[in-house]
Image (cartoon, rainbow, N blue to C red):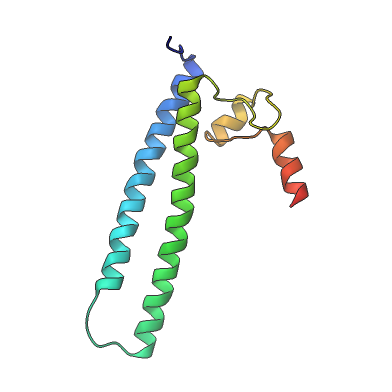
Amino acid sequence: MSYELTPFEQEMETLLLDMQDKLQGKIAEADQDFRNVVGSSGIKDSIDLATDDLATKKMEAISKVDANRLKAVEQALVRIRNGKYGVCAQCGRKIPEERLRALPYALLCMDCKNQNEGRH
């Protein structure tokens, strides 16, 4: 049995697939930049080494954020295919379309999101 996507789900699937492609490209590019910094040869002074270290840390942080976002996008695509897209993972209520348009990979409705942020 196959789940029939609504027009909104089709729209979000297209958007999420585009996001997935862009994030995968960005991660691949960052990985290549990281390899270039690590693999660059030559004699370096302490300022060059510090600059390389900062660049490496920045690339690692960006890659981690992008990797987490990519994971969230991929999980949203699974939810679309399973007929669970747009349902809050915490309370089970429908997530409003406005929220999903703003954050297509949202897992929580705003009430649950605000409750979770209040706890932390």
